Image (spheres, rainbow, N blue to C red):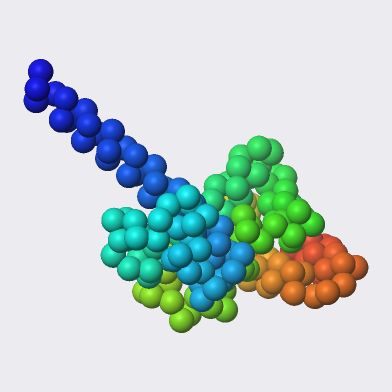
Length: 199
């Protein structure tokens, strides 16, 4: 009996620590999209997560380690959202629905939970290899997801079109977010939807 009690306490502590860790990563994933990698500080993340600054090193070896996990989380959340759109419609409507969701006004406005490629693209080159690797894997997964919606799936043409589609989607979202005129932002998205959608 005495051997069980410490194990239960240890498991409860480990569970609480894991929950805190996941909370930090979730907060950081939103923060990097909102404020960029350079604008995301450890003290602010820990405060927003409801933890002390001193507790940070019980979870991460460095700020870069936290940013890498945050990048992985942001990419995973984005991929899950796009995959959810694709899964919710018939195959022939998947690409069109994906494009509409990605270039919707709500996604343009919601930087904090939106596409990390559009929010962080220009900064990513200067980040740690783990952050760049997470981003590269996300780009490849998104290209693959778009290519799989093509009737030519499995051919070089489908892959090439998917590369172009992803580049145009992300570029359009970046421009739609940076301009200070709503009408221009909407026009950018509408033009992309017109030319990127399936024939």
